[in-house]
Image (cartoon, rainbow, N blue to C red; front, side, top):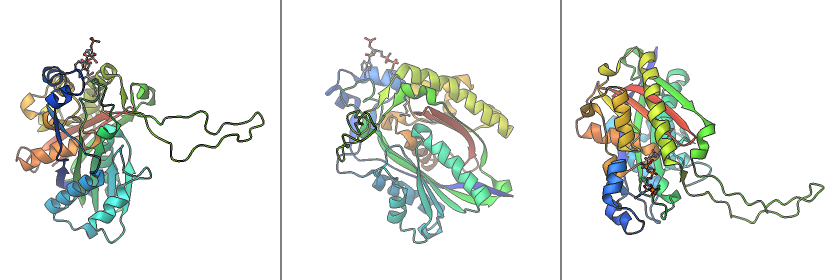
Length: 337
Ligand code: ACO
């Protein structure tokens, strides 16, 4: 009877900080509007020279150090990101930079702000059913690269970061993932996306199907983030409490037996609404989005790392974690630190 437990965490953020007042210099907004509607005051952003992979590696190294596990003991790396530095996936580059000499499997998981929860559950499945021992789950995103910096409705929300946890095989009795609940709904993609730009003149076909025009090289790109904020807000407030209730039910636990509520850090009003629905007192809700904004797949491990290192989350504490975002995707996991 094999279980899995979280034995280390780490995080890294870029050094460049952008405050609400800084944003007010480039779009028609102000600190009062942003902080009252979102809870966000600052965010960290990669500059053109910076590398998201480097942040992911820094976070992963810290998680390995806390777990006292060497890079050669890692047998799987799951990089949860929607903004890889290589379209084909960045995880193998992380593996190389960490110096994992035994060639562990490393691949990317794309599920936007739900990515980390999906990565965590995937790690548990690999460990329980696949004989894996040490799985690094990294959430890393640089949504600032896909933000329209002239759109005040979206550019105020996002920041860049990386966070990581090491999930390790253990005896079943020590298992640290009690239950999970995962979903997606492609119908809602129209409310939140950054889609490939299509050029219909490329691949122009003649009436007999022959190719008249070939695509020009290297002109593929994605649109900036398109979001209907109100719809995403409503979606999150509806599905996240439901999902956590399903996961709690599967684990045979009630909300009152959970030490911490740790949601994807998108908007303080969403966090508060979910906590209220679930009857979670604010003292048991983890939030650090005022400093970092919405960091997509990195937000949960970034907030977890801060809460663990500050001594808030103690060994043995239970956490209801939930991610939600583009796809649309959402899911929750009841875990023990
Ligand atoms: N500063 C000042 N005014 C603004 C700003 C701004 N930054 N942005 C919008 N406004 C204005 C609008 O133009 C509008 O003005 P109008 O009434 O004259 O038309 C007014 O403020 C209200 O705008 P709304 O969009 O209705 O504001 P809302 O209260 O819905 O807040 C927000 C917008 C903060 C984006 C909110 O809807 C939200 O947080 N939604 C959820 C977003 C989210 O969680 N996304 C997750 C993405 S995660 C992922 O997977 C990538």
